[in-house]
Every structure is written in C-alpha cells, then in structure tokens.
Image (tube, rainbow, N blue to C red; front, side):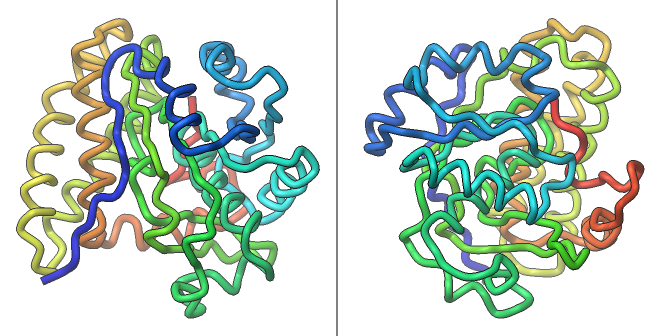
Amino acid sequence: MSVITYLTDIEFAAGAIAQVAARLERLGVKRPLLVSDRGVLAAGLVDRILPYLPKDTAQFFDVPSNPTEEATLQAVGLYKASGCDGVVALGGGSPIDLAKAVALLATHGGPLARFALIEGGLPLITAAVAPVIAIPTTAGTGSEVGRAALITLADGRKLGIVSPYLIPKAAICDPELTLGMPPALTAATALDALSHCLETYLSPRDNPPAEAIALDGAARIWANVIPAFEDGANLAARHGLMMGSLQGGLTFQKGLGGVHALSHALGGLKSPICTMGHLTPF
C-alpha cells in the first residue's frame, strides 16, 4: 500500500483570494515574494491579489512556460535581496513549481540538481523550506497541493524535485480567478487535470483512497469542461473544473503514467511546442 498524505490547508470558494492576508499572518510571513508570470499580469489577476499583500511586496514575473534553473536563481536573488520570509505563487503550474524551488534554495545550500529525486535528493530537503502559499489561476496542474517541482536545469534535463516539505503550506483555490479564461486554454488545462486522474487510476500501484479521488475528479472534469469551454463566465463549471484539478493533484501521489513520462522528457526541450505538463499559464 502506498502512503497517501494530504498536508495542505485548502481554502476553496469563490472569493477565497481574500484569505491571503490571514494566511500570511497565520504562517508568520511578513515579507513575501510574489511569484507569477507575464500572462497572469496581463490578465489583471495580479491586481486582484495586491490588496491582500504588504505594500512593499517584492514581485517576480519572469517565469518561463517550463520553469528553469536560471529563472529560479533570479527569483532566489530577489528573495534574498528583499529580505523575504515566504513565497506567494499566483498562476498555473509553472509559477507554483518555480515558487517551490525558490522556497527550497532560499533555505538550502548547493546547486538545484542535488535535490532532484533521481539524484537522491529527497533526504536532503528538510522542514527549513520557506512557506509557500499557492493560488492557482488555471484548473490543470494541481501543483498547489503537490509535493513536486519540475524544473529544467541549465544542462537541459527536466527533473523532479520531490519532498513532502515542498507541499505548499496553504492552497487558495478561487474559481473566480479562472472566469473568462480563453476556451483553448480552458480545454488544454482541463485535459492535463484529466490525465492526472486517469493515469493515477490506471497506475498498477495499490492505493484505493487515491483511486477513489481520481474517479471523482475525472467525473467532475468530464462533466464541466464543455460548459466552461462554451461559456467562460459559467462559475459553476469553473468551480467543478478547479475541484477536479485539485483532486488530480491530490491523487497523483499514487503515481502517474506514460503521458507524463513522455511530457517530462519533451518539456525539457527548447521548443515552443513542448509545453505538455506545464502549459502556458493564464
């Protein structure tokens, strides 16, 4: 039997973004670094969160569609120069994964590669990881409740850094942040979430609780993807997709499958078409 542990406090509701300030206070974070990307900024979603952050919050927006070691180091430099003590990630899987890597390197020495799971890095990651609050703006990756960060290193390898200590301390899931998301991006991110549920369910590992979550998540995504695609303002459909995506993130602790095995390798290539697994965030 696999171990399945859910360690994230989750605020899930329309308007939940208003809980950011209270979550920061609860975690004792006084100087957060806001990590997002240019797409989220252009969509006006950064403006939605700024009222709940300290006025002098440092902001990093140069997150690639597949987060890189180079961008991580730039963000870590800003984190340290600004005297930050925590990270708020706003966006799709790319800003959230990069935020996890920033929280790791801000508190642990050495190159990023040494922490990769394939390099035996799991035991090197300790509870000293800086606190992360993750706020998804797509319903796709489930990274807001995941224990992994996928980062493309300077040598071109796209590796997973995995640890329970990388799970965000809080996830704020507000379906209102996905209202008006373009139809193509709605469909693409929903299929990413659906693949998490299906691959987990079909994984040969034995973990019935994860399988139950996967089935429910897949059903929610399947029922809501077309209504959300056809009407970007359908809040009920957006709620269903975000919950399905969250469930996909919770359940893939059991393990994924061939789709993501391929996407992780392809995602490390320097090509605009190789973005499966970390689609351009909204």
